[in-house]
Length: 475
View 1 (cartoon, rainbow, N blue to C red):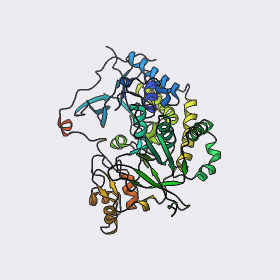
View 2 (cartoon, one colour):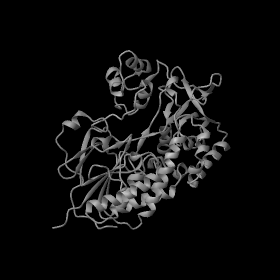
View 3 (cartoon, one colour):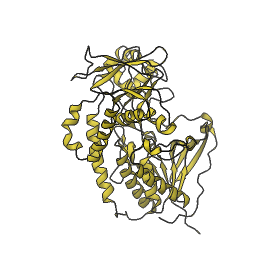
View 4 (cartoon, helix red, strand yellow):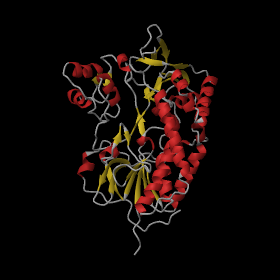
């Protein structure tokens, strides 16, 4: 009889998931790569659809050679039967079985049907999602997230508008503003709330990653060449327009994080791309009972969670960029292969990704300290501002729940106002609601990682995918 293949499910086909899948497959594990997108790459390496006929997709990316190596490696392993790539699969739950796990995913354009993947281990490379803090007018058509604007450009080769303001805080704003300007949009302002002095105070630590500094300098040069005004230590006070975005008002921040009276400027625009950093996607990990360190999935030096058989890598364990995700994914894939096969850990070639992980984590921590939302942003949110879009809950209702009804935590605010009970289950509004309420931001526990039709929950258990087969030869 042939020996049954050991199967590892890698959830997410961004940099971390791809690196993990290639490392595990090369060491003799059958990998099922499950991802919600039509193609591999994640947000970082998002590709335009083939039907669009993009002639130079590399113009929308940097580190294109790294992407080519990942893509070629994935193709080779898929052709050899070592990796099964399940695209357009939205994972909504990972179930722990008496032996192994079952990954449940919605498929199809309407996402009404669910399939299951039976695995021996699971590697979570679920990435991160954008944090956007509310302000008056942020629900107007024409206001998009910074990552959303980038996704439209990379994946659809379309501009969200012709005259754009890019605002908020974080390293994502630079490539978004540069990309929009290069694609033909008039970027009338890059509004960054971070203080340049915070970067100066971290100069020694940030200087340890010269490649990143060169990358940032390249963005700055391109913005200057296109005459894009960069407004550091500024914030968007309000977005204006009767039916859709027509302009934004920005103002300078003082040392205490308050808008300086008299510094207001009105910038006409039809697009506002705004973001305040990223938050790890930890729903699946939390549903499995994995420990979290704040918002991050806790892992050890092998990228193992505290739940046996579960690994995590990339932004889910802490936002730090593509280079960190690649290093963590490679280490997680190696570890998963060795543990699932019962082999001794393969130490050859491990030192380089371990060093890269340490450097990138240190750099990410310094950046996280430099890029910070205005400390008093919630004071700019008027009572009439909607803070929970799904349930149309205003900041005034949240403040009333705290001041008049005695709510002292995010869960109680949710019960009293319905903030966070809508379609997104608080994923979008939690930071804003917590800030306005003055409550600690504690990630909500969600048993399902995404909305699921009742028909999928009530249906008989689906068959396992893929069918069992002999173990593929390594490499």
